[in-house]
Image (tube, rainbow, N blue to C red):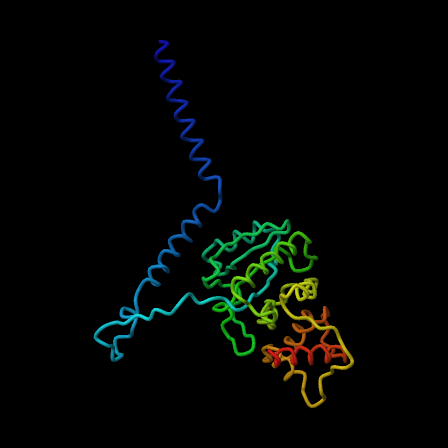
Length: 280
């Protein structure tokens, strides 16, 4: 009888340990989507391993033997595009970016408390910009890193969050030699569709650190009357298919203003942005 009791106890203990282990393994809510990431990543790595003799189109007059160059490396990002999530929590955004049906993602998500989630390898193409254009670049997803800040679109940005962003931007700028002017916002590349990051985003502070450009109005510099506002916006980089949307995007970013009225101060800043672009 004592043996049976001990055996039952041991069986119960084993079941308890097994169940506890299973529950511990399942506690992390993104274990399943992490496996999806690894599987997709493995498929992409397989493509990278294929040499051009396999990739070349059959109809081309191919050489009999493949000769591979010895001079190459990975393509690297040349822009950073900053977003706000327009959602109610960091957790909600993480869930959105791990649901395949949403078809949206970013390389980094920064929570209000400053926690940084690095969700995608920097050399991979995230789906964060959508249909976008900046200057002659009409595929920003292929040349940029997307950073999402946990913010519903109407609130100030937490200091801890901005501090983490600055640390991240310093690392990205150093790693990929991204030009100062190539730190931009989602609204800059998609003015008809987007307004993020919101008007309270501290672009001037970022520019002081070397991430983006910023100019204060200066009476010595003003846009000549011969240059129209739409043309000036296009010279800065904006898509002017909708000139009002482009103007509002410029005003939100460079003037901390949400009105479509063009002032002399606006013309001064526009002119300085153009001069800066032409000098680089």
